[in-house]
Image (cartoon, rainbow, N blue to C red; front, side):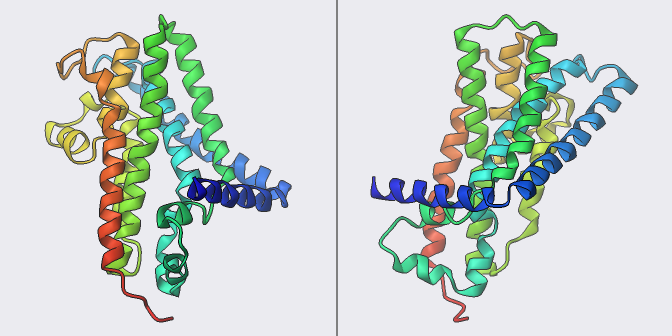
Length: 266
């Protein structure tokens, strides 16, 4: 509990420091909103040109879009410390974290918290609400729970990828940008139904980086559509668990990385 209290203390200090420059905070938040909105316009242009993609309409794709962007915005906010972790390794500041009698994961998480990501969050939420309204989804308690659970699962899955990217810094000193192809690239891929991709590409996002488990399957169940991939009907209801499992696995890799850490001596 002391670790958790310390994390929230870090969190409070980070938020207070960002709100000291409110105009900057507001402008940055608006900037993130606009940038992600431009991505959404690209999605609209695509469907405006072709009408539908393998039986999926623009509004249905907007549901996928909203879910994945909300999940990723939360990840960007609370895992910023891991996203910039390579700087701590390069400067040798990670030594100080190791000397403190507190959990290293919570200390790195508390190193930075980006409130400005509320711009992406708001944009994703607006798109999600619009899609839910236009599609006239017959909401049940189960579907509401599945939507919330899939977003949380998506947050943990993306967080796991960023933790893995940070862990590589123990060996490479610098963060490897190739991992961004699975984080930011994964967000782009998950904006669309997984069934539109080639079989080999789908397998990557189901069995290697299981983004389909936290976005595609739950969205199919919420929409009440027949799954083009013909997976069992119970899969969407358990698939978000994969995000939590993936995060726990990433933390185990992080522990291995710490054991191999060698200070830069800077």
